[in-house]
Length: 344
Image 1 (cartoon, rainbow, N blue to C red):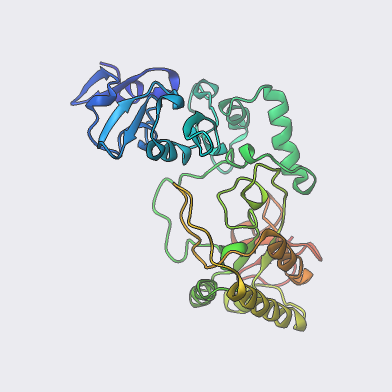
Image 2: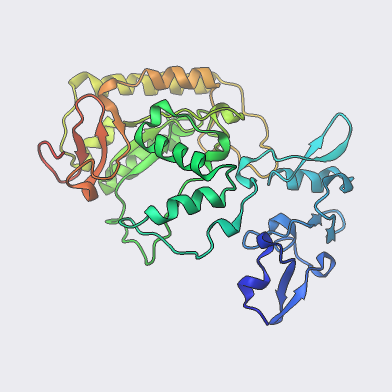
């Protein structure tokens, strides 16, 4: 019998699953729980199966969305970008509404060699090939261009999900292992939950920076949650938290006052905003409160004091990188904890 990983590797065309220690042909009808059926299966998605909530059973629809005649199972698959419900025709159609579920080529990373913080050049091309780029050379060029000059190279919604994610081998120390926190500007700035975030950072001595993200608190589908290019924006220091974090920099006296004025203005705007619409299937509601329209969010973001702007930390940007959280845009100084003076 092949190893379980080989048996379950649906992405490589092996339509089998492990059951009671045996590798058996995939049979959707034999699956009795929703968490294992179809795209609900987070470990090994089964693209030919779909959970029918009304009947409480898993059925084989062959990956053909048009064979799903009910709205409920179609909407469940729409959350994974597999199908989409056409309200005008009342039918289920194929469509990848969510770029996170774009096709991948598992053979693009054949030897599964991992990378480390110091040694990862060998997985650059593997990452491009895995995401099924038409031309690996073009894909690699886009990655390097984004690293070298991110502000001049917007990325597509699909590329947002092609990031690298660190899988830490071990348990990170808490709270000493936390370098900083990043707040979602669109969702949390000017909200009670945002104030709680500030208080938490102060109590722990963690720097807090704000990031614009999609501008709507969305799921990463470009600006405003749309299928548009994702622009690059830097982060902004929170001056109300900075002093408690013990960083090496001092800010102009009016920076904190301007930040607080903007906080109150956004707070007022949120109070006057209409309630958000119900979340779509598979997407959680806003955590911070009413989300402002994208133009209002962009206007507020642009009003943040320039002295607070920081670039995300890149390799060898600061000599004390382990203690630093970014590079100030106004003077190129590193922002570090437990440090004094210029640290570049």
